[in-house]
Image (cartoon, rainbow, N blue to C red):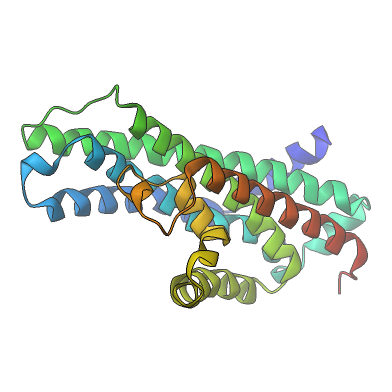
Length: 248
């Protein structure tokens, strides 16, 4: 398994597209934090709750790690390298397991990098407004930790989606349509049941202080538990589907 993990990491070092995708995460953080500060209107609104809200954008970057995970499997089917991968390692379950580990870890690393960028941008804005940035605020760090976990979970879920929908374009379209349409629009029609869907569970895990007071989210621990279940389910589906289905 160690060799497979190293091989998967080597594959990622030889292609650009996944890294270009993850490079957009810090840019999204800069835009999100800056937009929140500008929209507050007054310096007095930049309190600890605003800090937590600003760093909640770490979780939003999980959309990019989701696509990053999809590329792990669907990308190989698109470029027809999956056949060579399975010929060199016939134990397909171990191949998918290595992809889940590597992409999950890199999803978390991406979350950490986004957090560092977000902290730097937020601290700079607070200083520019003449407001003290509370580095010791526990709710902000809890939000950051939730956002990093959300990134890691969505990267692993993306691997599962890529294994189930082997078309790269189709898998990305399905994933984004789910977030935008099913959870964004249809979710409003099914009321409290929408809280149990993957993206909303992630929102609960990585939400800021003010967002946690809304009734449409699970408690933070609940969101984390539900997202963990989804991650395990998609990981199992990725392995079983890849083992049973023909490559072609």
